[in-house]
Image 1: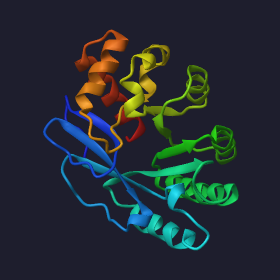
Image 2 (image 1 turned 90 degrees about the vertical axis):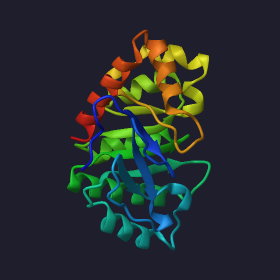
Image 3 (image 1 turned 180 degrees about the vertical axis):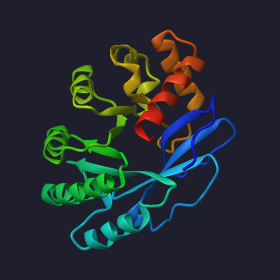
Image 4 (image 1 turned 120 degrees about the vertical axis):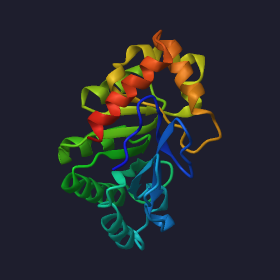
Length: 224
């Protein structure tokens, strides 16, 4: 497995991203795309079934793709996988396929990237029922302080929605959280990751180099 170099910015979740000098990325591959993880310097992958592209007809095929690809050393996590009340198949199918992906992740001792839209109760029930030993990372979080605190109390990590985290109104949330539970991402958007780090470091009142060091520590703990 590739690991970020000392001083690299870590982009914990992106689509169609490319690493560049000083930026290490976790590229999200989705099973419906049919892409395979490659050995690329400065890049590792997550691999999973996004609920938007899941249906009764393709669930078996996509699970097989996850099984075939998630064992590669360049694949450090499963997902993004999860629950979406606005777009996707039935709740029962979402839960079934999510659970299967968690079982694969547990067998491989890999964390899971979570997609969750208006389905926090379902996610918390799944976490309680499945009792994962490996970490779950909420991708694109933009919820309340209360929800963030609840998720962290259950052992989740949070990676923030890029557009939300650069707004002034996100500052109180950032300051309320333990820094050893956060990650930062671009989700494939055309935004400079360094600006996100600059904003969050300013919210925390620390140098950006210190924030980089903290997120490196989080990365090594979750993906060890």
